[in-house]
Length: 164
Image (cartoon, rainbow, N blue to C red; front, side):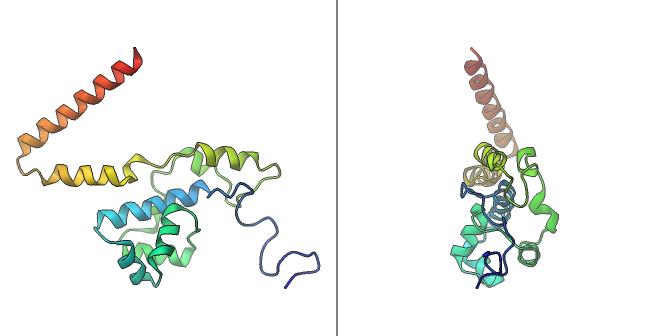
């Protein structure tokens, strides 16, 4: 059904996805924080979905930022994941925070530029989480410290080599 202007009823004109079809960087960040917390708790997407009445595919879309998470759903997620709602917005990169909430501007250029330069937080990557879990499974603190120092030395050498 349409209004007198021809716009679909129940939708704001200009609301929704940008013309590029890319997710808003804020949605991507919030989704990555959902994934981070879920993974830290060792919870599957299926278990999280069951807890909030969704399928694991819907959880996947939230975590990728493909679907925007509404306020009531964010509240449910905070309860199930045992974090305050503010957790989902913590450590937001400046370019994500600067993204327009309505996903559109007159030219579409600002949104396209910010979405294309957005990089997810490396702390939210599965590889990082697995590395941290493996590190803390090392029971000997002196071995952990030596591994930590080795990792820092390798990283410093890589940075120095890249600078040459």
